[in-house]
Each structure stands twice: as C-alpha cells, then as structure tokens.
Length: 82
Image (cartoon, rainbow, N blue to C red; front, side):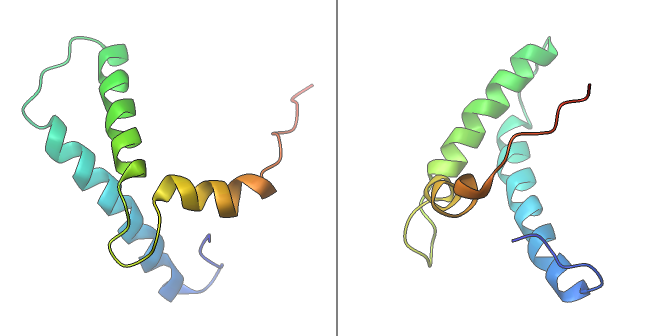
C-alpha cells in the first residue's frame, strides 16, 4: 500500500521497506568490483530475485507471492506518449 498524502506515520513503513532492500543488496555487493553497468545490473537482478523469494518472518508466503496476489491484478499498462 502506498503512503497516504499528509500522513507521516505511513511514510515510515515505506521507508523501512526501502532500507531492507538497500541493506540486503548493498551488503552483498560491498566487496565486489564491477566493470560495467550491465554486469552490476545483472548481479542486482539475481539478488532481487533471491530477496523476493525469501519467506516472510511473521507472515505466510513471500514478497513475490504477495505481489502476485495483491498488486498484479490491479496494475494497468502505462499510457502511451503519442
């Protein structure tokens, strides 16, 4: 769920989720050297897939399952820029 406007209590939940992603990925990339942006992106993609398939600690399922159940059914295509 996105944070509601003018509700600062909601923003903390979204910021914590971003911190989890940043820390989980950056900790694993810390001592690696990349020689191209494509190489870095490929490594990040693998780590994101691992993180999204990791089970929740207190809820049933994974992030990937939650996305497919809650968010994906209501997504619409982006408008064309013509």
